[in-house]
Length: 404
Length: 219
Image (cartoon, rainbow over all chains, first blue to last red; front, top):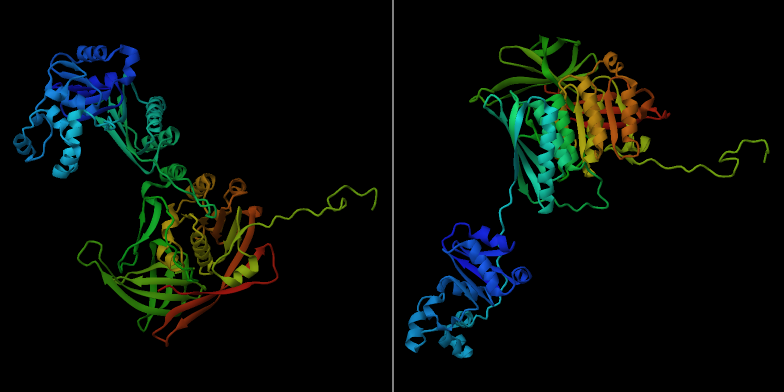
């Protein structure tokens, strides 16, 4: 059997949740749920109805019927508490009739649900199609359907207010670990993972210190998350002692991967993120990532993107000569012979030019502040090394790097 | 059989089990014939003077590893890595983790320590090419023992590129590279760097033969 609560109460969901964890929020003013499991607790259906009425007050209408739709129909049309109602006397207009149906029923002299229920099903199907059959079964209270269960929005956040301010990171981490353990257990129970962690520290100087970690893959283990937060807070400590802290996890579907038996193993993404966080703490945030080529004629057509490496399509292997940059480029003194480099002197490098290819004149980005304009040469020096040198418009020479 | 002979696998009639070490071949066939590839779970060193082809060989090793769908790491002590020539050599850049250490060898060693202990990498390159041998020789030997222990029994190759061998006895493979010839195309005055011929000399294990291979210029 099903109970339906219909009325203007704002907390219908809470009333329904007090009796069943699975309920359907049919409309903003209507909830319906099964009362079969309540029989051992409250007794007969009218006793269950009284218990619901006692909790929900007098402003709502409650109906208990064999089917969910019958209970909804009754709650909408009978005031107060109704148990096992007789729907036959209700007018046809109480049904959700599509346009034109009511006029046809009036022409036929069908005014009540009992009259509609007595019509031949085949004739109704021929005249109105499946809708007519559905309305007749609704009038009979014979529609059996599963409830569309309302999913309560689950949040993964918590807040702790402190009696005394905390200025050290270690005791703060104990509190963060406490929240993280609870929230990660909640994630696990709901088969979810976190894609983002946000920590908000309310400080003694009435300011807030907010840090957000965007995770490369959804994670739900508290230990790596705690370690990531620890390293982030070590790198970006709050300016003052903490008075309260709140932590929120953004839920996401957990990562599912199928490893290949013949594929080489790769670093676990959560473990790799921890390793990268440690290395970022060592060499700086902007110095760790994946190189990416940029579609430009700039002398340095690449950038470092801060993300984890990923398996991708494979370029063919070719035996190409490598180049190494000197960062920053070395200032050089270049002696020219008939406008070609003849001798190069720089810090740690000097020699006569044995062979030279160039000049390759390039320029670009003149409309920005990062414009470049230079003449490049590939040179073989008498010290048996191959270098790339360039000259800027102001006649300054630099050694950009070497072929190795 | 001599009754006084010590009991060894040989005297007992057994021959010790030989486990061939798994290797990763490079893109250079002649070098693969010489050393059968870089040994996995071990430290390999490539050393030589400037423009000798150390980085070319490292790029070839990275290209082979990324073609094998492995994730690799390049610890760039002196910010000298060139992604353009690496991509031209066949390195799948999206599978390469690039760590720039800003001329700090200590940071580079610590980064390598984190990487080899994290596990799962196919090749970890430590680029010490622009570190002076005097400074490289100051690296405590305990680092190399620690790295060797960390990658032992894993598929990870720790490849060092440098001017002089530094890992002492910890390396399983030491290759010296030299540039034999540089080929220029075009007439005098309009020349173009075409290719270089490189030679690899195995220093550990010592072999009486060398491998010669050619690398074309990028561009």
